[in-house]
Length: 344
Ligand SMILES: [Zn+2]
Image 1 (spheres, helix red, strand yellow):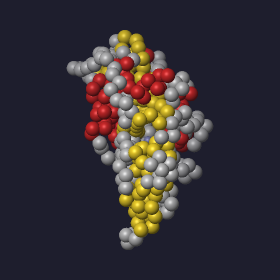
Image 2: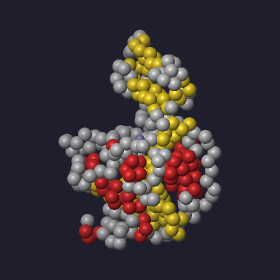
Image 3: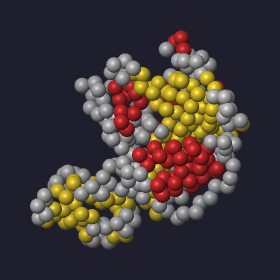
Image 4: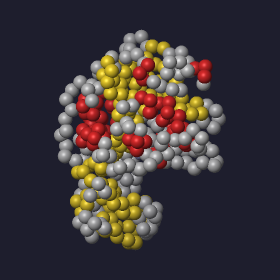
């Protein structure tokens, strides 16, 4: 890689500029420093790691670099490969930023988990027989000496994400087969994370200190205020939620004066500090008896479970009062699968 490093931007092949619209297209880079880029839009492929047959895996990246200095915002999606509303939200934000006057910089990395996205898989698909396919969002910021998953994240974190962000937004959805509203995770001990969560105009915010290995936690512990945004249900496209999530991200960009306009807090989301997950006691088909955002009392019926012949197996009741944050959409439920999640 030595022969290709130049002034913070390592370019494997010659960069070229399209003639008409000021989009600078860099074929691929091993390291990105947005501070060294010229103003305008840049489209590039970040060579994150080699695959098992020695070819580079490329993450598509779109950078909107301002004429003037300002906040550098990093927007990521696809950490879980089955969460397409997050990816679509990142795309919608990119589309809205074309021809906007930018101060600072917005970097969009919509396909973090390449192998997972290609397989409709939540997990990163490992090829090393000694490494299990893994939930990437438990291994940030990775490790240079670790397994296949940790090395992939180490390159991503050190060469693309961390050097280029003052604020970060990570876009997700609920896992395949289950639903969420527009729902934000934020650590309220960090003032800017709390402010970003409120600017999203979401349905629900969980004030949460974060978990080790989660991208949001890695950002926060490296002093880059961050939020995680859950844009509805796993796998399937929900246009209205995607538009609302894109509106929220644009609102954050306005609040940091990255784009022109007045940021507005127009929603009064339910703000919680605790979630309660009710899991399937056994396998079987589960019919939810509640709807999203429904308030339930302790002891209220949440779901009924049947075997393959329709014979009732089990009933699930609220262990305490709360609001329904998630329930199953796929009726087929293995033992331990999520039935209902409540928030308080
Ligand atoms: Zn996710």
